[in-house]
Image (cartoon, rainbow, N blue to C red):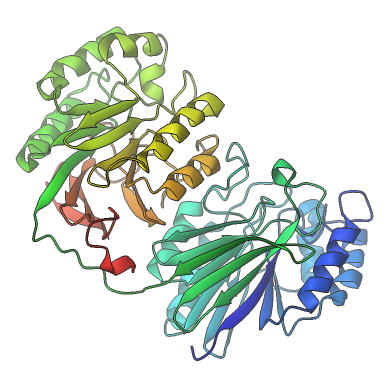
Length: 517
């Protein structure tokens, strides 16, 4: 890429002759966009309010006011309402497309389910995306756009209108080194670096609905030849709200481990005590035998220790795990709080908020609630977490800071996002902004890890529960080197086979962080 690529990214116009469309904001944004030099524009969905014919007619009239060399128009969930996806194809264009020009690949996708706020890519769209990314694998710049967010967005409450197969799409984007992703949907601007892919969400240009009374906005994105991604979030009048700078390195990540291992964690979940079958008992015993051979400093249990939260379940768990009491840290899952489980939990386990061990700090965030698999944080708990993570900025960087919970924050490939965490967007933003080193979770029975900004997120499979999404049970082994790198491995319980899940250098700021400079 010989010169910078400049992109206007706008979203969620919600054209309508009714009150949901704010015409003055739209006209103001168009005036600024027309005066802003750019190579092309990306519109990431919700052109109309309800997908009605008169709204499309208004859209086709007013969108001609935008002066741009090229605009990629992407369909949104509001555009798909009332059969509007058919009107889109007639008056706007294809709902799924790609274009390769000047060594830049752009893929536009339909993430919508007609007459539903939530989204889904589906197997065909995922296969199409992989096929195009493989065909143009040598493109100097690979960009993808769709409407629904794939990472939780701040200020949006419960994740109830996300793409249910967001994890599968995230895996495709990361596996094929997509440089930037453009989304809309939640009317709140947000930028994350996930490994080396920049995920950019736009606010709304002209909808009556904004988050926390925030301003209507759009993004101005510049990608330089040095692989810097500069995102300017702008009000519709052109005033800058925030500047974001992310760097795409695309270098092979090596880990200097000459100094040895600072801390070794065995991460488990889903032991399911109380099921009462030989298979669970055999898997548990084989799992702990394997864990013993790795000689971990700590064993982190990320929930669903018991099957039904009964007294006998807890008694079995305490008996089996008592030998590890000095190195076990436990965070409950939904199964542990069934029935009288919440009372029994505090009888058998001392669940502290902050645990200091092995020159490291662990914050136990209980995201589980009785009689629901949906994760709950709430304002009070979130305020306590906020005090902790901001306090970590004042602590010595020689200490490793980990937050553990049951529910995941990053979508899991191969699983449906149907029991996500309330306020996930606010929690994710808080953890990534404050640079917590590691976040551990144990939901949905599948191992996965990635890095958002400077924080590693690791989810584990079940150790001995039959409620696993993987073919076999496993646990994670997490090594933190003295140089501040994290290496995550998954160890298969039946076979003992070990595979590397992720390598993340430079997690601790004052260690060797040349990879991130």
